[in-house]
Each structure stands twice: as structure tokens, then as C-alpha cells.
Length: 254
Image 1 (tube, rainbow, N blue to C red):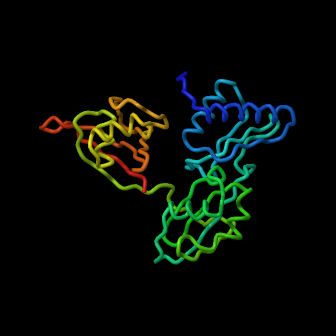
Image 2 (cartoon, rainbow, N blue to C red):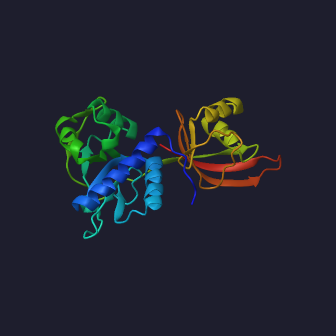
């Protein structure tokens, strides 16, 4: 099994999972974390496998969720999404008003809601669906009246069809070699030297791992997160051009 190097916060998360699982065994009740990002979920899964925890489920309110809550269940219960403390909130507004994921996240943070109480935010024309922890749902329903300068209406419900989980912008280009610094430079539109400095500073994640080596090799389907520049999926590497450069195709989360 691959060993995951944990930082201080992740060590605390692992210990917290020990406590939750012990509480389930001792009290025969369900226990849940707050929302976890992709990296935290990976750390949690590694802890579960190492400690041989059973009867658990990761759930974010819908099957494609990136931010999820981990639930531990007593052995007499079947793990199921309906038990999770997640409230979907549908937000409606005028279609001509353009709002983004960042706009909604900013509005929720302005209500002093902690990030770990906010799950995925799905946005389309005139409508968004927010998945929030039940401890924050009342505040959102009562206080979220505007997002930026746009008036909105909230209801504790799900629409008939969810907005798309992700929206992407296609990017393509060429790099000198399939190294991380070359790819970061191309995606962020910066020099190779600046890309290398970003990586060495711990500001680049590859497949949910902080990578500090500019020479790290990249592969098809890698997920990259570049602090200040965005998140990407590497769709294709190659072929090599006549000038010896490697063509690539990526999707950028928007």
C-alpha cells in the first residue's frame, strides 16, 4: 500500500477518525466528519484501510461530489446517504445575472460559515444547488439573500435535474518534455523558472499530493492544482511534434 505523508492537520484528522470509529463501536450510533476535500478524503481512506475500519461511506449529496462527508455506521445499519447531515439548497436568480462557483462560495463565507460546512456548489444559468452541512443550513436559508449584487431566493430542495457537476475549458499546447514544471508553465502561462519556484514552494498538487520536485513526471489523467491559477485534468500527452515537442490536451475547471 502506498504510504501517504501527512502534515500536522492531516495527523489530527486521522486521530479524529479513530475517535469517531470508537464512538460508533461504544455507543452504537452513527458518526460523521464535516466535509472533506479530495486530499482529506484520500487521507481518510488510507486511515480506514490501515485501521481496518468497516461499515463506512463517503457521501457528498450526489454521486459525483468532490467534497464529501465520511460516515461511520454501527454494524446493524446499512450505510446510506439519507442518514448524512447534508442539506441541498436550491438557489434561483435571474438568468441574465451571471454568477460563478466563486461568487457563491464568497457569499457563504461572508455569512461566517466555515469551509468544512460547505460541500459542492453546482451552478448553471439562473440556478445553483448548494450542498451544506445541516448545522449551516438554517443560516443559509434565512440569510442568503444576495450573492454579490444579485438578489437570490433559497429553498431546501433539489431541482428535478442537477446542474452539471463540473464545467471545463479545453486547453492545448506543446511542452518540451512531460515534466511537471513544463506543464505548470504552459497551463499557468508563466516562465519555466517561475513554475519551478511555485512547485518548490509547495503550491502545486498532483493527484492530491503536494509535489516539490519540478522534474516530477506527469501522466495522462493526472489532476493538477496550481495555487492562484486553477485546477486541471491532463487529458492527453502526445504525439511528439516534428520539432520534438510533446503535444498535450487539458481541461481546466471553470
